[in-house]
Image (tube, rainbow over all chains, first blue to last red; front, side, top):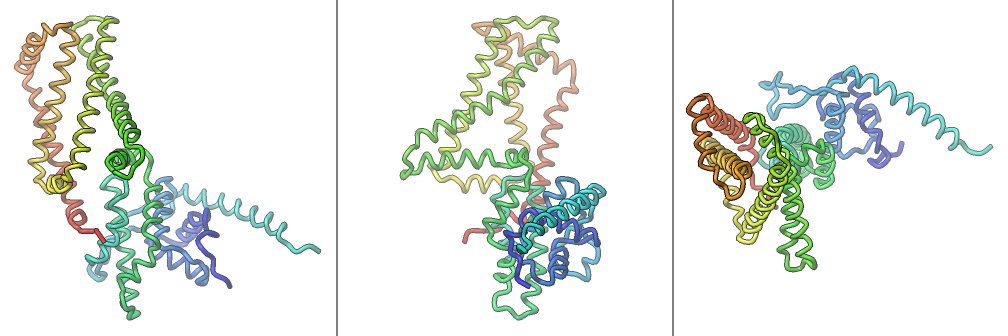
Length: 115
Length: 268
């Protein structure tokens, strides 16, 4: 499978993050790893661009964040911020899924080879 | 860890946002870089710091994206306005700049507009308050007088600000700004409280001048009246004390949060 570059992801990153968080809470690095796993390594993301997306989602009330200080004795290094989906985030995710299905159906129909 | 912090600080420091938000960005990006660094180290990479930094992407693009994620209101209170002014001033003093006067004029007009927009409602409120306390009404000619004086104050303050900032640029006094950021919170709190009270006092005197007519014959009475109020209501002394406590505390919090990052030398 070919690599999916950042330009193709534009506008979809926030939906993807919401979907990853639906599977469980996680910090930035974990979200990226899950995105990579779910896409079987085809998503080529500039890792930094995840954070502005997370801040936008937090600002819109779709995700909530808390500082994770647990286990800092076993795990050296700076503290992390763990994100979780809010009720509003779940609703938005469901709307985006519907919109995506409709979009994929329409584009799929148009892109089908001519008979 | 210091090398990773420098990578983060190069991205975050120029962002126009509150220090609180910037610290959140710093800590989060540092945690990310730290994990990427550990991975690179485990993979025996030649330069693990550079590898981790590369994974974040182009720092300029990331900075722009982070800036765009900051609410617009905070962008201005967090320094976008000051940065824009500095940009205008630098353009003004750049010998290669073809239109220095245009930039100069734009910057000073911008400052005047901001000062006037802040001062006018403030002055109007104080004026109404004083008229209400003395149970009088606001006469039309006094209102026009007040508007004129406020415009003058706005213009004077803009000019003053403009001259100060341009002097700093021309005389290359950036080290003074850096030194002042390291001063003790109590000292900074004291200076700020004195400045605020000084400006407030000046403002009240100017109001008395407007109310007392031209020439300002009632100023001594106004000052005496103000003194009498202070003597009658010792609770008024809580204002400077409260202001000093609040500003000192704010500077202390700012220093505690910013010290570790602010002292990093990020020049390449």
